[in-house]
Amino acid sequence: MSRFLRASLGADFGYTPGEQPSDAEGWLKLNSNESPLPPSATVAAAVAHAAADLARYPSPVAEPLRSALAGVHGLEAEQVFVANGADQVLDCCFRAFASPGDSVVRTEPGYSLLPVLASLFSVHDDPVALEPGGSLPPDFARRPAALRVVVNPNSPTGHWIEPAALEATLRDADGIVAIDEAYCDFAPASCIPLLGAHPNWLVIRTLSKSHALAGLRVGYACGDRAVIADLNAVRDSYPVDRCAIAGAVAALEDRAHHQLIVDTVLRERARLIDRLRALGWSVEPSEANFVFASPPRGLTAAAVAARLRDARILVRHFALPALDEALRITVGDREATDRVLAVISSLNGKTLSGT
Ligand SMILES: Cc1ncc(COP(=O)(O)O)c(C=O)c1O
Image (cartoon, rainbow, N blue to C red; front, side, top):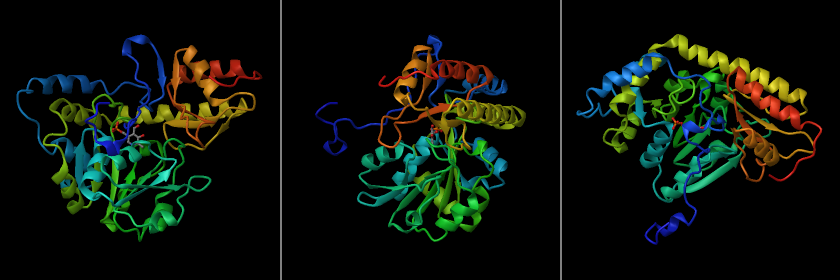
């Protein structure tokens, strides 16, 4: 850090993403909730075709992708805001709706980018503890807030709150309610059908997970036209590049491939949870593309992460109070599940602590 960085940000300011080793190093990456399958085969051709026009700026509102997304969800194009990943959508929510000194209410545990954005925008970060089992405490809706963010399914726990239950808690919440549904395609239902009844709600989605496009960077928000117009007012000039627009449209059109990704994850998630439980692990119920699991007595989460790393498998260990006894393991394909379980079974009955 230089001496010029805003003092209010502090010396270790910044978001720490999951480790992203070089693609050439042959790691099994189960640490960033990426798709186990590559994107639709149609994406590469669409990206290459779009590359021919790179001398021209893209559509500022990411057309024709915006209309394609609206079509998928039965919305009007003006109800969709597209940006460079869901992370940038969240950033734009802070830009648009939270003035310095306002409160932003979020859940704990929750997405670790949110407190970083709170510091960046000089807003008051107000974390509210989720209840055991992952439901929202009534207080979540009552605290004063310009912006409330719920991640559903939650990360890192994988817990999911039914839309009707969310609505019962959030019905009278004021300010903007942003429901981050990054993992919703792996869950039974979305809150998008509730948007018509709640003009202050936004549902945030990404193509990084269930469309296997984490490398292309496409996320979006759905909501009331006026709120979407607010997001457009604060966005970057051209947040989504031509290749990303074209690749994302191609991925959306290949519904069968999207379904294959979802089906693969659901099948392997069930297998991973069953096998981990049989090995004595305590596994949270998950409706996401990852599981949050604690090892049996004798093993610490940090030590298991280290043994997996020795086998060139990356998982996510959050060295934070209340989270450090568990690992977040992304659901991979069949071979990935077998690899991770082989290492974990080999540790059973051993005593390992530390890293
Ligand atoms: C809850 C949540 N929201 C948003 C994102 C970011 O998605 P994107 O890749 O579209 O920026 C992630 C990424 O892992 C996430 O876990």
